[in-house]
Length: 369
Image (cartoon, rainbow, N blue to C red):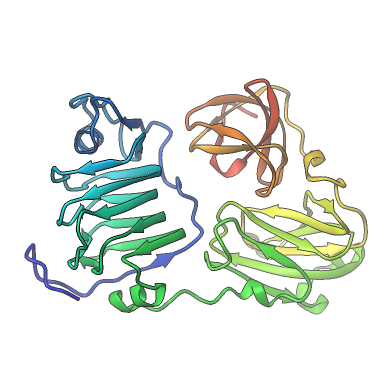
């Protein structure tokens, strides 16, 4: 590690977590701040920090504000320290800095997503400084540099999706911060099923084949056991399991002791039996048929038509209850809509004249629905 003038380095405890949803932990009351026109990046960070309108930027509204870029920027003024929970979403755009540390996180939380950070000339020094703070990189890249990160205190980092820090490999980043790499993706070792995750199987999802004897549940035996997989770890959005034959699915929730078997909403796809998951437990394939032949028709546990729900994050609006389904649009955080029905982990809604699905993990029920 390189020396930094702000203070002496202490031993850093770092945990790298992959596959957590980008907006986890944000409140429904956070504000979107758009960097364009009279609102520059420096003032946007200050507006989010102090919850007041500054320059041409609207006031932030509490921890979890999201700053969006609407054009590529060249940032010549020093940015304020990050002392609260702020997300900078570049929307695929870039910010070019002079030869200085662009971001300093001091007891705050900074999420950089869908963004490219560049420098006017190749920077050999550190590109980030974090002191008792948290950093998330999600589809974020640092180009035109050879340095790394300087960290003090009990700081944490999360790496989601794709990322890059000055061309260094993931292994080099682990070596910088002297911590144990996450466990290898055991879900690739399954023989009885295929598990996929939207953020990748190295996101912390873990899997294990389970024999009939290992299930230990009479309800499952009576239904006609075929195969089973135990899934645990960081089950963020987009985890899907498919068995290579047609059958019905049961679920033994890991939160229960002893585990109780219940039916699991499923769909048949080209001779496979699949389901989406949002919590740890054992998925068991038994004799029978999937809930439906297509994901779009999976409807269970019907709700009262028009029951109001409110989104707690920006959520993709999809044609079917699957992370691989066509994206129809985005339902913004804080939107109240009427739910038609729900399945395991998904809500069916009418939105902007179309019928589709949103993930239920980032939805709050309103009233007694």
